[in-house]
Length: 281
Image 1 (cartoon, rainbow, N blue to C red):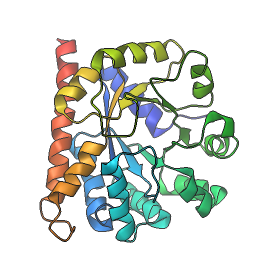
Image 2 (cartoon, rainbow, N blue to C red):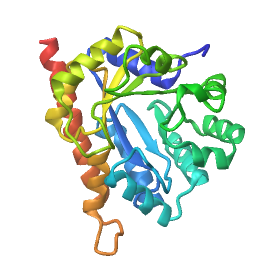
Image 3 (cartoon, helix red, strand yellow):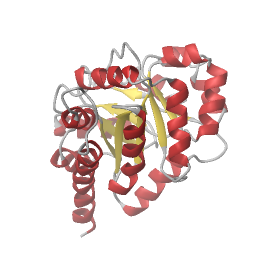
Image 4 (cartoon, one colour):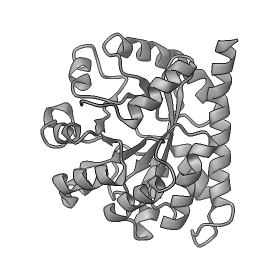
């Protein structure tokens, strides 16, 4: 990639500030388009540095129950790839700085058409992709075309990614490395902080890219601890659970939906920033 992306610039700026990024995941269209857009628009002001936007899919095999159900809510409300890209465009109308990463699975992209998807995503203002079911062996399918379009392609590393596999995983990875802090699906286990710190340090021996840690981070205290050794902290299931808990008996959004999500983001951002303040002192 010949020029820096919003993701590159954001992590570089946070590095100069001496703090980790708060990366927030929400599912596009959950619980409906209007409230989803309101949430996404509010994330930067609440303290999110990077936004991961889930592309709803009927079979999200790497995700736990919380994100699975959020996808089903979004799909039931009529969300599709066209509307997900429109949501990015609507967000970009008021924010041209916050990085947006589309995260999900290859099937919806394949059905949409790879070339069409990349063109439309770039035009909408997407900065990067995380596609969890495309391994490095399939880079020609989407990764290399995405890089050629100027999009970051962010890869996952896990506790089972050993020294032999890691260089392959890092090949063609850009933007940042997403370290999965626990074995299993999203949102079902709490990360072991000491183990995470060792794994992040090991990954950093192989790459100069920022390393963000996700899966299982739910509280400001966890975010604060992980930010000690990582360049970013990713929170997803806790946010989509907050959406779920705010809905009425019919599963519709209430007046509490958006404020509840943004309140949690402010708490998480406080944890990350508190650690940076202590380090600076």
